Image 1 (tube, rainbow, N blue to C red):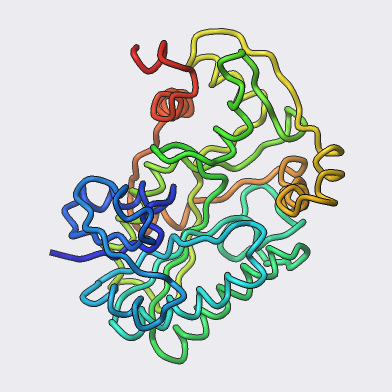
Image 2: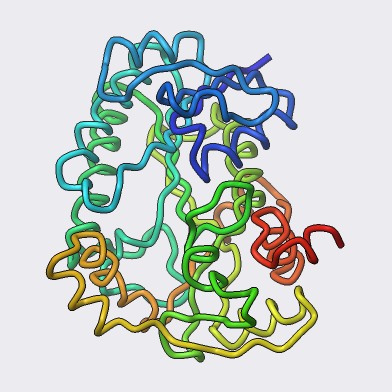
Length: 318
């Protein structure tokens, strides 16, 4: 039986991936800090380790066929933490002989994001986070080429769904759903890339099961759901069965708040993604793994709302 070690298993991506690997019959080990190790998905063996402790991380990954790298520091800590974490993770993958898998995003394309981006779309370091993501993937490519440590990057849009909170959906878009308010970050006619986490998790499993047929450094795009604000609002209204009032994000206020609150500054820097149409072309992924689960936006939103109790006891009991 194949074994996957999931770093950041208590997070949104890690939890969804863990559930998908367990359903597919894998042995799943979840690595988390002490405070979160008791909250992992059913069927996942918890191991307490810190990604900054290289020796401890290597020990936690022993026996892994695949390491899913779902660790992600706070937005305000990217500059000092992302690359040291990446170095430790890829060193652990090399030490134990595992394939390394990484959930990617559209940050690599900076302000040049556009519709139908494929794996060959040029990466542009026009934001600090774009530069960090490009450098991180560059590190993984270098280790793949020089040491043969296979890395598979699966890029996706904004994550939503699953049982873990703190996505754009519950923090912003549907944060006021109980008051019949829908909040959108930009013009309502601009397409935005989203990824329903249970579907994305199934794609990780499919790639992991085909890893031996892949090269040493591979990138794939997950098409997910590309929705305008109007389409997202309509899908949400279908999911909850009632009309919602639309409101916009107060970006000028957030920028002012960013002068004294670093997290607000970091969020504001990424506001361009709500003004610039973008989507991911999943053709190569589909050609590699075949048909994948593709939950409709209405069904995905209905399940996400229910899982997180965003509409209160009425929907959760329905």
